[in-house]
Picture (cartoon, helix red, strand yellow):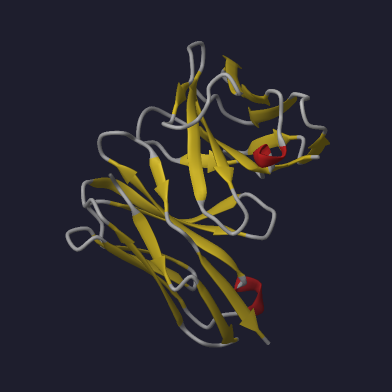
Length: 112
Length: 116
């Protein structure tokens, strides 16, 4: 059974810092991995999607890497801003079930 | 493109009543929609997969008679919580897939259900 874990569970940093959020999964047979952002009481916004054949994806200040064999992905946020404060979720789509399995989330607070 | 809406955004109902939540794909046709439940400060748990014109597939542990799912058209899926209890209070989020298997899912804004 696929399990997805995210570390740290919570993070509070001053603005301007570069951040690394971690996601690990137990079954490497994934189709792709996706990072989402969720603001309090809101739905999900897709940030980056990495196919299993890819190593990384970039969008603006965000960079996500994928090491499928070791079951890990990292989301790198450069020059963090207060507007980045949110919960970040990673989710993997398994090869055989086509379901999205979500991680436990990292709650990020960036203070001025 | 690929916008998914949910209605209502918030609902409060009394114990024993039923409440319906709608999920709509606004600018695309979705043969498959998904319903998730999220407890406070927890991650999303898949409840069921809804396919247009056929019965929904429920995840283990989800009561299909309590959480009725109907996907009658390519742009609308509904989740009805029957005989609601306070423990059903949660944040319900739907998503819709833009294409066949493995295509990306787009998520709705969620519905906050409170049962008093």
